Length: 420
Figure 1: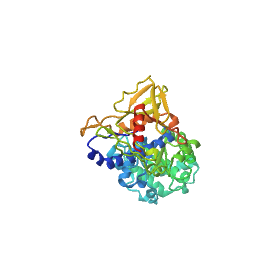
Figure 2 (figure 1 turned 90 degrees about the vertical axis):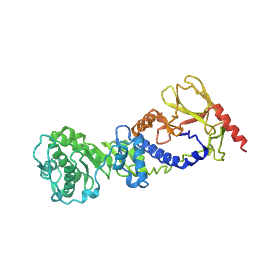
Figure 3 (figure 1 turned 120 degrees about the horizontal axis):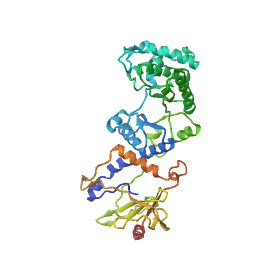
Figure 4 (figure 1 turned 180 degrees about the vertical axis):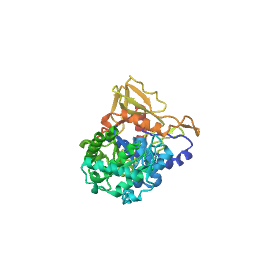
């Protein structure tokens, strides 16, 4: 099915080929890959794109952030993409940040004002230390085993970003250091009127650890009478792929947000998309590329593409027709030939018919407002939600049907026969 059609002087439209394919191929590839992650994760998990370090250069990184958002991701760690495109930005700190601290003596500044009431600044490291003793006693964790450097890193970060404190808890031991330190800092922030926004895990058994961490949060919530604490979001990362995401879902977990990098932006299952740009009509005469490879044979003529919907509300097939043909009608039989099986005619009675292409540029001018990134995302997600689940399976999906009308089939056959 043609994604878009370009009409104009032959030389001009030929010069556009490389530019248009460059813009469409990677964008469609990444958006599709992101959509697969969204379908695997389900609607309730938040997804964060964090692939800039693995992307194909700075331009590729920005494109990956943009089109991952279109494909269904909620956030990006790419601050520039957030600035340029308005994508919500999320992220934590690096392990190198956490391990760069050795003690609370390195924390500067050291005071934090309460959020409400205009109270005096509080010595925040001392407040955290008092909470750490209570947390370690509750969790039965030896106080001397909890990393001082990690605690200093959390404290420093929390003083700087009290509204957005999120702890990276696996630099050292998660349950004996990272989580006790996080809880102490988060409860100290709570005492001053602030609320931590979560933790992130970047190693180990993510599903099992998320369950253990959630239990700690529930225990602290009940013991210290802080109701929101049991719902502190848990984010995970660590070379997450489609398959590991599927395994997480099967194991059961308490994960709220998943960060995906390498397997999202590099698209390892299909590193490139083979969209092509072919001449189908010149001076009113249809053109055909003839090849022994049937999949590379072009469909001649200027076409209109219709989506035929079934009675269950799912798209049944996309039907290509010549521009001069009358459109198919809902409730009436439509004869078609499936691509790849052009010797067999079929019939379908669509419950609804939708024309797919929209005209945005005419005579070099924008003729209707171009959709915003947010509108494009909503359209993509709405389209995916309407697709039959049989087409959305990760393993052995049912192929979506694409067909041509009788007249277009006859033109294709005639041109093929006359080309020999």
